[in-house]
Amino acid sequence: MAEDAILGYLSTAEEIPDSGLFASQHCLPHNDVVNVIKSLHGFRYIDAQDIKRESWVLTDEGKKYAADGSPEVQLFLAIPQEGSISKDELQKKLEPSVFKIGCSQAGKNKWVDMGKQVSRKVQHVEDKVKDLLIRVQNGEEIGKDDVSSLKARKLIVAQTWKGYSVRKGPNYAPKRKKVATDLTRENLQRGDWKELEFKEYNFNAKGPPAEAGHLHPLLKVKQQFMNIFLQIGFEEMPTNNFVESSFWNFDALFQPQQHPARDSHDTFFLEAPSTTRELPEDYVQLVKRVHESGGYGSRGYMYDWKREEANKNLLRTHTTAVSARMLYALAKQPFAPKRYFSIDRVFRNESVDRTHLAEFHQIEGLVCDRGLTLGDLIGVLDNFFSRLGMSKLRFKPAYNPYTEPSMEIFSYHEGLKKWVEIGNSGMFRPEMLLPMGFPEDVRVIAWGLSLERPTMILYGIDNIRDLFGHKVDLSLIKRNPICRIGIN
Ligand code: FB9
Image 1 (cartoon, helix red, strand yellow):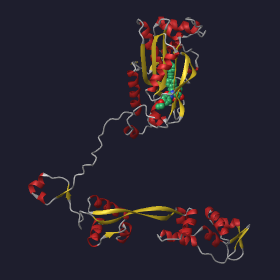
Image 2: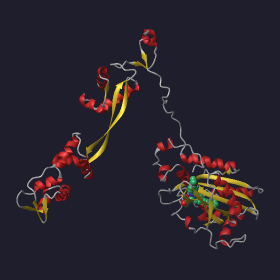
Image 3: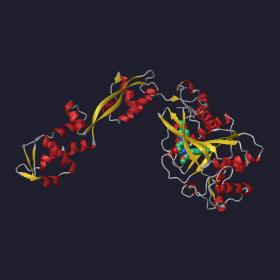
């Protein structure tokens, strides 16, 4: 239809100057004409040039006034020729917006006398606004000031009209030749391949996207962190147990049983199995004692430590529970320095918001060796975070039940132009290490951070719910860029 019209027209005419005009002259929807032009241009039957035209179209309000007349004229006509009408009565006769705008416009035009009573000040008025709107509707030109006054009243808005001017192309023909896109056995048998015109190969055509699996951004960033830990001689701790006993999650870390984090407001306790099956009894007694009366130079917490409290099962609130298990196992062997790390899920009964879910991935690193100092901790943190592109670190004294001294870690983030809290750290307390059986001079420095925060910053994700959980938009997973940490 449109194709024959265009190719046919060009058989006699040099060009089609304006596809819009051509469409209306041939009673064709301009869209169809445009699609055909794009296709014929693709096959070089024609040469199409973009043409743009700024035009004005009526807003919904503009359309209303073009149909029913401008509000000021509607108001004027609602006032009796002679005498006056009360403002309230007049208001009842018109729509609220028409009355409001009508009053101000008619007032401005000095058409009416607006008091408690309203009366006409002139005999007759022209609805210039309506006429202008109708002319715009018909695509007619109107004066600049009229345009600006209608625009100011939000009765018209600019619209860019896009069309094409068309000329014959190198492959022009009055009728599109069927181009073959494949040389088939039948063509060869029938020998009609001689006449056939073959479509050119488009060697730039992209093949169908290769469907493949995609790594979640969190796993890409996790891999980067694992590479760094392995590069600096750390060994991964086994974290494949989300369910932990209160003993390893809290008591072994010298966290007292009345500590607020140990109640169900912060921690998910298990109904079934509600209690742990077994704990290393001798070690439990040492933990009980250090909580109750201290030792190793500590006075302990001086409270009655309850076994049943330690037996309670929960969803681990930190992977530091795994560190406790691994350090206890390490203390059983002849002492050898060790570097451990863990990256896995932890669960906290926290209110969900833009940066917090009830679960996140904790990253933890620890170094166990003789005579380690806070300086060693700062050194290790410098080394670790510099490999993440975070070189300028600052430390702020902090408190954890299981480390003394403790420090919050801050880094200046060039992209965000601010200091960002990037983690927490400290030296595990002797009340934690010595009951495990470590020699006096063995120290353990450790630190932790989350996986979600760096991933959100690296991928520019503002709300953690867009990153993790059932609301994640899968296309984010499909088209997120490769993760090269150290990107600022
Ligand atoms: O991840 C955190 N911040 C962070 C980390 C990296 C990062 O990288 C960007 C690319 C540049 C950006 C930000 N934080 C720890 C700091 C804050 O987000 C904090 O508000 C939230 N924290 C979580 C806990 O929230 C209750 C992050 C999580 C956290 C905090 C502490 C530890 C682990 C995770 C720990 C520990 C620890 C301490 C001593 C010994 C052993 C473990």
